[in-house]
Structures are given as structure tokens and as C-alpha cells.
Length: 383
Ligand SMILES: *Cc1c(COP(=O)(O)O)cnc(C)c1O
Image 1 (tube, rainbow, N blue to C red):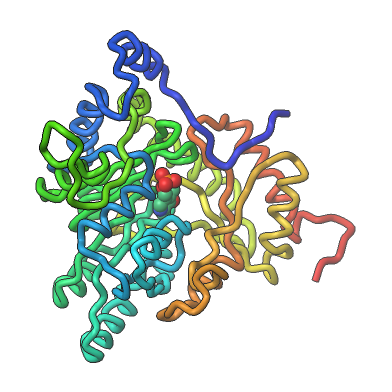
Image 2 (cartoon, rainbow, N blue to C red):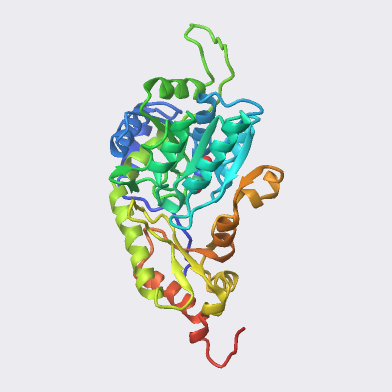
């Protein structure tokens, strides 16, 4: 049996012809017609006015912080339960991340804790410069209370929708809830350009400035003239061609990931001590990854037991993101709450969820997980 991956690239079939077109026109560069077309097709899919195609989601977050004027010594609030790429760019700018715990309802930033922290920082006279809130595993933040709290103190939001392309909140697509939002097209995301990212906004000026900063901040002059420090963060025309092909199958990818989740739900939800990631009524998840939570006393095995049993069968599964406030690299940063994300990390596991998995492969995963459950372990007494 071939290895079963957590989330592997899934080409739609049309990508190669678009890449060939890029070769034929000799736009083998970090600009060109596919970059422009990818930006406009992407913006219209998300339902936002402007988009800048960049070399990664991390680059998009970094530019986002620059655009919002984040400076050395500023505080930037950030979801603690996320991938480190959400928080690293805060440190690139010399600012200090302050991590906020998750809500049980959707595993995303807890709006109540956020409001308390904003009120406390206003009393201290030191408001954060920005908030980075993550739509985790393709499940939207509860945006209404989060936006209300930030609006009250004029704190701009960067929506980290790297995992949430194709998901929505109350009918509007993820990526439309911040002053800026970012997406990722890394190899494991719901669509991929092999590597790439997008920064989107309703504000034309911000996105224009992002393109300027992403191409070494060249002033309009015949010679090379620079008045500010720039970056080399644009997406290649080749990668943009792949992205355009992937965009054409995005809806199918979301439908398949949701079907993968459903198959797991049918196969696993009857097991004692096993829950699946919730999907509150406010959001429609893209189910980028199917995540389970285990209660070891009822289930009879820990998430590590299950992960190792899967690894034994050459099946890749990963613990839920380790919260940023527990990461050695962020030791000493402030954290607001933390027990919810700590519990999700201790008990949570991401199962293989690629849109290219076959039903037989999903059933194999289900079978291994079921076999680790106490009620299915024969002749062995487990604590
Ligand atoms: C993948 C990811 C990123 C980073 O995107 P890259 O394109 O890999 O740089 C940022 N935030 C979250 C939540 C992610 O999952």
C-alpha cells in the first residue's frame, strides 16, 4: 500500500496547459499575464476588490504588518492556536506577539478574551497595533464579535485565511473580514501553486503599496532609485499559471474535503470518547483538515497511541498545532488564557484529509483508528 499523506497536492488537469502558455510567451519571471489574471480571478472568487499575488502566505502576512505600520516595540495580538507562520512576521518587524486562547465552539480566537484584553490594554494606555486572527483548519472565526471589539478601539485586523480558502462566515467568504487578509498556496493547502500566497483587501491603495514593497520598492525613475526598504516577494508567472488552473477546481476540492470529513464522521463518531472538530452554524468550513479530539479515559488510547498506530501503517497524521504560547521560540511573550488550546493540542489529531484520497484509503484510516479504541481491543486490558 502506498503511503497515505495528510494533505498532498491535487492537480486539476488544466494547470499544465497554462504553464505551457507561460513558457511559450517566455514570461518566466515574477510578473506576467498569469500573475495579473490570477489576482483578478482570485479576488472575484473571494468577493473582494483587490489582490496581490506573493511568494508565500508568510510574505503576505509580513507585508500586511508593514502596511499597517507595525513598528519595533508594538504589541500585535495573535491567535495562539495556529501554525508559527502566523506569528513569525510579528517578530520580523521587532514587535511583540500577545497570544490569545481559543474558544471551544470553533477552536478560533475567543471573542470574550479578546474584548477583555483590548479593554485592559486601553486602560494601560498601550493598545495593540493590530490583530492577526486565524480561520483555523478552514473554520471561520466568529467575526461579528471580533470585529466589534476591534472597531471599538480602532485596532486593524489581518485575517489569516491561509487554511480557509473557499470557507465562509454568514454567507461571505473568508478573506473578507479584515482590513487585509492573507492566503497560502503551499503544497499542503486546499489548492497549491507549489508555493505562493495572496494578500487581499478592499483598499486599493494598500494592495498597490504591497505590490510596490514586494518588488524591491522601486521608485518611478529610469534608473534604480529606492526611498524605502523593499522585499522580493512577488509570485512567479509560472506558479500563477498553476494557481489559475487550481482555482478552476477549487469548488470541487472544497466539496471533496467536506465529503472526506463526512466519511470520517460516519465511520468514527460512534466511538466512545471521540469527537470531531465542531462546525458552528455561523460558518461553513472548507474542512481543510479533519480533526478529532480524544478523551483517553473513555476512548482507551491517547492521540499519540493513535498517531503511532497510523504511522505503523504508513499513514501520516499530525497533532493539532502546538499553541504559540507553548513554543520555546515565543517564551516570555504574553498570553491571554491558554487552557483551551492546550487541551486541544493534548487531545487533538489531524487525519489524512487530501481531496485526492480514495474512499478505500479513508476507510483504512478509519479501520486503524477504530482498532485503537478500547472497545475494539481484544484480549488486552488498557488503563
Ligand atoms: C500555511 C499557513 C501560513 C503560511 O503560509 P505559507 O504560504 O506556507 O508561507 C500562515 N498561516 C497559517 C494559519 C497557515 O496554515
